[in-house]
Length: 218
Image 1 (tube, rainbow, N blue to C red):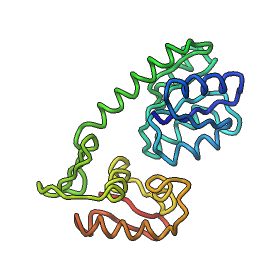
Image 2 (image 1 turned 45 degrees about the horizontal axis):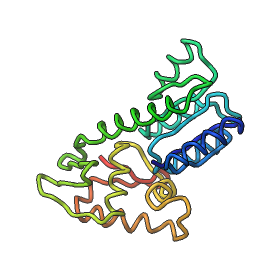
Image 3 (image 1 turned 90 degrees about the horizontal axis):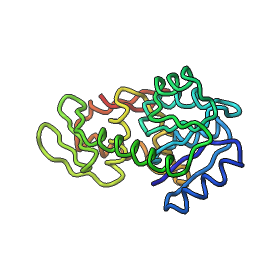
């Protein structure tokens, strides 16, 4: 799995990250709330592991911003804040699990497996869009008015990103980061090109654009 660990205490972050990598996971570490938010927004993570007491932006604020963006990646809070009020707040704002420090690594691994399984199950359902479109995110298939439509991998990734946050506007830069990755070195106008490809395969009116706002799907 590809994981984002946001933890400012290196005494916890380094051994936790090492254990996760030893278990076969890919781990990106951020030590502040704002860098963590920027990394999480690039997408592509299977789960986010967030401390709560972070500099710049705390873990609850970070999670709240991501959920407001429409990002549904599983979130596990790893924190020393153990009160009932904190646990309730963490889960209410969109956390999938809440582990109180100090925790044992087998507990973290089991929690990680559980929340990712739940996320995969939630993603397996077909989602409707645009008064005629259906996308199956598990099998990466798309239908338009009952007819299967073939998409390249990049076209599909663009469509899925928009459908999973249906109704939300995405700037060209956000789509470029999520679909092509933060290290993509090409021109941002490639997003416009792929939007035109998707429109041709569905219908022009289903994928909207607006100057200053970007793109969204109906």
